Structure formats: structure tokens, C-alpha cells
Length: 383
Image (cartoon, rainbow, N blue to C red):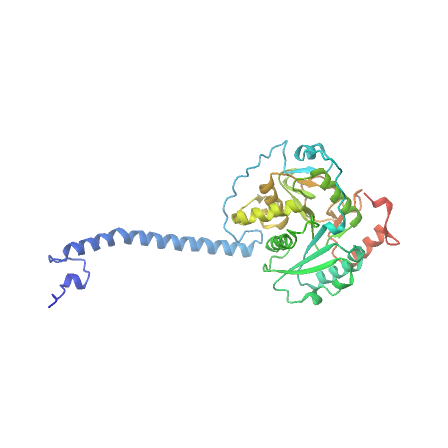
């Protein structure tokens, strides 16, 4: 017959009776005394962290430039940037030759054609945006040759199918593709959507030897194809066989600090694209890095897609961004100071490659009339 459990065994009381279970009871009490304070502290810290996160989320709703991710301090770059080795160089400059030493080749490099190029355009479903894209189809896209691929990347909130989103896609020589990024509601910053677009391009063309150049454009960017392809070939031959990132350079400080190619129009070769995608895959914490810029608005530059992609390129390759005069020239004045190399606005520049802030269909018509005569680029605007 089993012995009836004592009161000490049935319940846990603060006061212990002097019975055979007393050693067990004392051990249990000791554990309680040791563990309970830690549980209380842990609960307090957890509540404190939740409160801090709530504050950060609330701040992100007030300030679109505040990262919604954790503000982990950025890791120091392994690249040795200095006054002599800045984060940007200018095309055809001595600094470019130092960053990209010429490789001796037995035969000259052939020129790329549009069949070697992929154009990536980030968009979303908006009436004004849709009219602008249609105008691009009516102008420079219909002049492009067969063999060029153009990827339009929208988001999952855009419910349109291929024909609805791009009604003239089958009426032009280039091959037109439509992709949907899971990213939504990023607006003009569009960092997540751009990263997804680069991933799409990488997956589509990683094994296709013919596609070597990837040009990212904003919908409000007008391009002069002949001049842009000329620049592509100049950059390719000046940097071969290394990765490159080129465009119009902006910096966090005047012509120094953290520099990047403006998102209106920039280009990567396949090695540059692979370097960016691979680095992001291996270092997902890069999304949490913070690079602050102080001005009229204090903001984290890493939230902007153009700064982010160039930052990743620099981290992955330790190579500078290449500034090309005539790229992302602003059609209209804007209350935004570009701190890279000085460039004139559209009405005063001597270099015409890509034009930004082309916001209305009438602007596209005006530029077509300005640059072309009888369907050909006027000689005075050729590079």
C-alpha cells in the first residue's frame, strides 16, 4: 500500500515542514529564488524593446526617410577609400585608368549592340505613369531594334495582366517582359522593387552569354539610344574585364564621401549585376545598414534604391562608380542639390545622353522634335 503523500509533497508552501521531503522542497525554493528575478528582468526588457520598436514604427510613419528596419550600425567597408581612391571616377579621366588598369589584349574588344543589352524600367499602376510609358512606346522604344530586351517591373498591388499593362508590347521590335515584385508601397524610393528587378534580370540572363549590359531607367527618363550605346561601349572597353557601375554621380558630401549613380539612369555589366546580387544574398544585413545625410531633411540614404545599389556594388567589388557627363541631365530645375561633379541643366548642357524629370507626354514630344529630324538624330547632338 502506497504511503499517503505528505503536505510538503502535495503543495509548495513558503514554510517547509520537517518531513522526508524537506530537501526536495528546499531545492525547489532555491530554484524559485534564483530564477524568478531573471524572469522579471527579461519580461521588463522585452516590454522595453517592444516599446522602442513601437516608437520606431511610429517615427517611420512621420518621416518617410526613417528606416522601418533595425538601425544596426553599418559594418566598416573592407575597401580602402581615400582622397586618391574615391568612390567615383569620371569617364576618360586618369583616375579611371588607375582604378581600371588597361589589360593587354591580342585583339580589340568588339562593340556591343542593343542585342547585348537589357533595359529595366521600374513602374507602378498610376494613370499619369501609364500615359508616360505609352509615350515611350510611341517614341524611342518603337525605334529600337529586334534583339533588345526591356523588363518592366511593377508590384503585386498592380492587378493588370501583360496586355492591360503594356498594350503595345507586341507592336515594337524589342522583346518586352512584365514582372511583378512582392514589394509594395515604396513609392519613389522603390528599393525593394529594384532589388527584385535585379534578381529577375540575374535569373533570366545568368546563363545567356549574349546579354552583358543592364541599364536601369526611371519612367520619367528620356534616352537618346545612339549616344547611350556609344557610352556603354566606351565604359566597357575602359573597364574590361572588371565589373562596372556607371551613371551620373551624386555624393553625400561635395564630390566626396559616399557616392552613387543616380537612379534616373545607370548601367551595370553582368559582372556588376552578379556582384550586387551575390553580395545581398550573402549579407542580408546590408538592408539594415544606415548611412545618414544631413541637409534640409536628415535621412538614411540606404532607403533610396540608387544609393543602396551603388553602396552594395562598392562593398562587393571595391571599385568606384563611373560618372558620365550627359547622363540623367535634368529637364527642369529641382530643389535638390546634386553634390557630385558639376553638370549643367538640360537647356545649357553640351552632353546629351539621358534626360530626367520628363514628367509629361508633351515633354517627350518636345524632346523628340528637339533631337530628331526625319527620324534621325541631329548631328550636333551626337557623342
